[in-house]
Length: 339
Image (tube, rainbow, N blue to C red; front, side):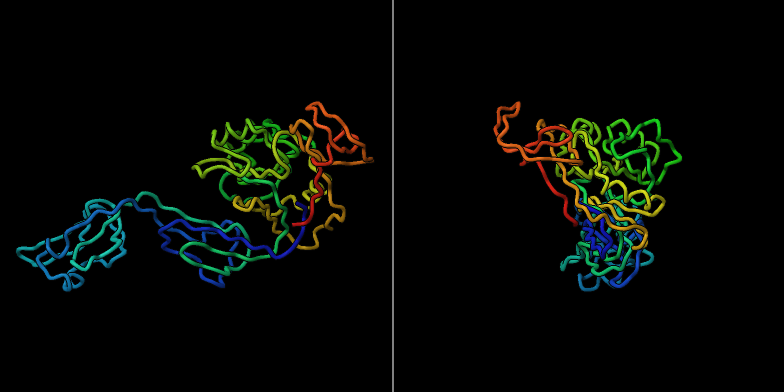
C-alpha cells in the first residue's frame, strides 16, 4: 500500500436487467453513468393469443408493443377488431419479458431502477450485460477495506496532520460532494455528520470497529458491508481502531488536494486524476506495526533495534522490535510495498 502513478483497471459488475451500457472504446470520466437498467420482480403469465382469439403465430401482428417493452399500468399490449374489439393491457407497471410459443406473455413488475457510474477516467475495454471494465492512468493508493458505494469528488484536506482525528466541527455543507482526507482516525460521529452534509466520501487511516457497526449495522466485517441504500463511503487505508498515517502515505496527499478523485469500493482503492509529474513518489516503503493489544496501527519511525524473546502481557513469548512507540512483536510488523 503506497502511492504510484500507472495505468489502472477497474471492473464494475452490473445488476441484472441492463438496458443501456457504454460501448467498448468509449472514453468516460469518473462519475459518468456507464450503465443503467431495471430490476424486475416475479413475472406473471398473461393470456395473450387465447384472450384475443388469434393463433399464437399471429400474435406479433396484433401486438402494439414489442417484447421487452416497459409499460405503464393500463397500457395496451395487443388489440384485435374494431367494433367488437378485444384488448390485452398491462395489469401494472412492468415489462414484457417473454412471449411463449402458445401465445401467452410473461409480464414482470418494475421493482427498482439502477445506474452504475464509472469509478475511473479512461476507456471502456469490456462491456457486457454483467460487467463494465475501464482502463485509465491515475494516481492510486490501495487501502485495507472500503465501505459504502463508489464515490467521486474533489480531494479536500480536512485535518492538520497525519495523526489527527477527523473532527465533526470541521465538517459542514460547504464540503458537499468532496472526498475528505480524514487523517489517522475517523469516528462514527464525524462520518455520519459528513454523510448528512453531502460529503462524497472519506479516506482515513482507521475507523473504530464499534463505529463501523453504528454506521453499517451489526453484519459489518473487516471485509466490508452488505450494500445498503444511503450509507456513507469510507476507505480505511491501514485498518481499524486508532492509527497514524505514515509520512510516505500522508505527504503525497498535499500536492493532490483540489484534484478530482474517486473511491472504488470493491477493490478498496483511491484514484486521483492528476498529472504524473505533480509529485515525486516516496522511495522509502513505510513499515507498520500492529499494537500488541491490537487496538492501533502505527508506523515505525526513528531508530529501532531487535530484542530477544520478550514476554508480553498476554503471556505470549515472541521475538520483538524495540521502537520509539514501545516493544512490538515481529509478527505484528509489515512493510508496505507498491500495489
